[in-house]
Image (cartoon, rainbow, N blue to C red; front, side, top):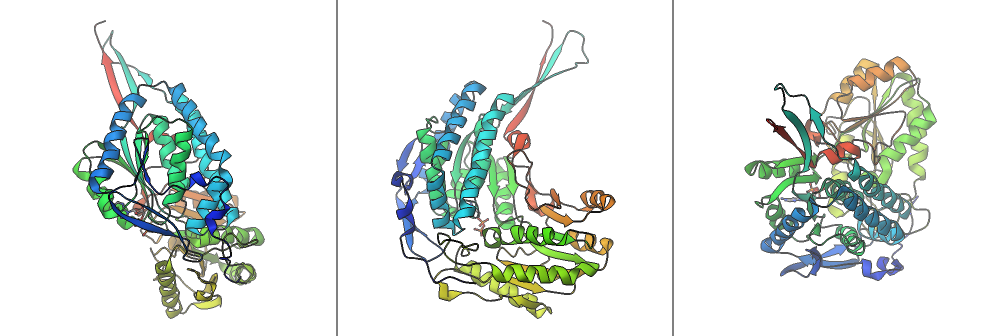
Length: 495
Ligand code: ADP
């Protein structure tokens, strides 16, 4: 089901507080125009220009690290209670502006309003949780082998963090890095994705309102190949926190190696979603829809390979077919729309290429299978493809689009082997009601996160992250705060 183009009203007219739409970068508490070329931010639903953000030069981006280094020296000495208070104020400012933030997210990312509102609440929870956790960063008193000596393990902030965020969650991928970093006592320079800088800049405006000290949270915009190295390779940067593609993650890891900087990397996923014959079929189909089609399939934990075991194959295909065919596609601001556009036309072309390749492997298109240029933006039809075995094309290739591919496996052993046959290891899902199998799967799936009979894995308290080429480190919960802390050992003798 599709809707006619809904570009009836400029997207940002919906903002109640227009001052949240910032086009300049935010460095050391000032809004900076930058001396490089400005770049357009476009609405992927209709390609209309939303804003032109500042293009910082390398020295201008480097200045944000220098400002962060000064702010860090002050911030690390504030009390944990003060840091908690400031983070709490930022959380409250975000929640007070929730509707406007959701407008910015839909405008620049394309996801439907309902999802955008959900992202604001989800993303804000990291700020709230980290405000609380800031007061719970503790050390240890250790036994010493020497009589009379005292030994301690202290937790100290890493220092200045260069954070780099993707476009699929323009708010949550920012707060999931910045909030734990600030809670730990670090200062941050953030580079948002060029497709979605407006939400990040609005978060900076809200941090300013919450009286976060200047220099603690900077947002730099401009050419990634210019400002990226300027902040990542800066002598005063101590850590890189990144979410994005595995290819860019590897590049950043190499850049970090020179200064032996700490890295936290959330990279690609290739999530298997295995459905066993004893599963609750309707619940499994609903969960696949939620996992596969959220943000039009553009998430790193989306079900990339659906594996139906044994006789559940046909009924699962039918249940998915009915659901996929009903999805309403259109402008994310239009009422009832469940599927927005992809982020840009390159993404549409890439997804089209993958669909073609899977068809070439014997895949049968049950629903969709084509771009929807008639909608006036970067749209691809929600698609369902049925395959017999595994798809060689999709082994280690993220679909990152609204395309569900259902393969078959004969038994648990084959399904597990298929599920693990990938260089990635972020999220894996399975639906089964067999208690023994639940434990075999949790232990046997080579992934950082496993969801059994559930598709939602991100919570403020959960350690989100992957193994193998899906990354290093965890975001969320106390684990996420730990990433921004170093352990200092102190030994005192002879007192
Ligand atoms: P995608 O191709 O889906 O945009 P990327 O991994 O390229 O995924 O992008 C994620 C983030 O990494 C974005 O903010 C992007 O601008 C940034 N990025 C891309 N290349 C570089 C680079 N060389 N240095 C620093 N950041 C980069």
